[in-house]
Length: 246
Ligand SMILES: C[S@@+](CC[C@H](N)C(=O)[O-])C[C@H]1O[C@@H](n2cnc3c(N)ncnc32)[C@H](O)[C@@H]1O
Image (cartoon, rainbow, N blue to C red; front, side, top):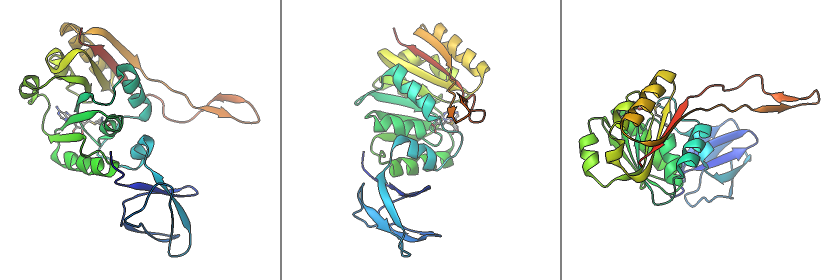
């Protein structure tokens, strides 16, 4: 991982900028030095001081270019926790989308091969990998993962298969040929119908420890009046199915 971009922060302002970039704001023009580093400060031409911070996963979720709905950090956390993905692991992922999940996995030290069927989305994802500093660790392939399955099952097996596509069940059916023994499958589906298809495909494929979870997290409000779950905010995101090769 290399620091390809930084977060420049002043009060509640946050800009994701690259070394050498010039960016106009109502607080003045920011010129980011080529040799900028985490912890530096950069002054606009009007004298406002911005603090330079290294990018963290949630910053990528907030600031990378989006082509569709990226996986939420809370769901990514469950994927990472349930599969134990670690440095050196080989991950097969689809669809890439904005590439948020791929950036998290690569930043944890995994080497990721990810398929995106839409060529324009794949281009955006490649740019996002550059910005996130993980372009060397994420191979964004333009194409339909289902069509690539024969080629993929002939290649070296993967440690983890992550899927976030409507046709995930078709890939799950081939998971035993794609993964090492003990390797994990993690599938994100926004709807219960897709989740059911994936569970049935995982059982049919002979995968072990098949479990489906609805992910719910509630933010808490603490005020002088009392403490309770927030009445607004993100509710349902999706379902996650985990399974592993016996
Ligand atoms: C919800 S997005 C994935 C978001 C991604 N997990 C992230 O964290 O940014 C789903 C993506 O899958 C792509 N897709 C759908 N079916 C596909 C397939 N069979 N092969 C490859 N990509 C596919 C879509 O074009 C879309 O960009």
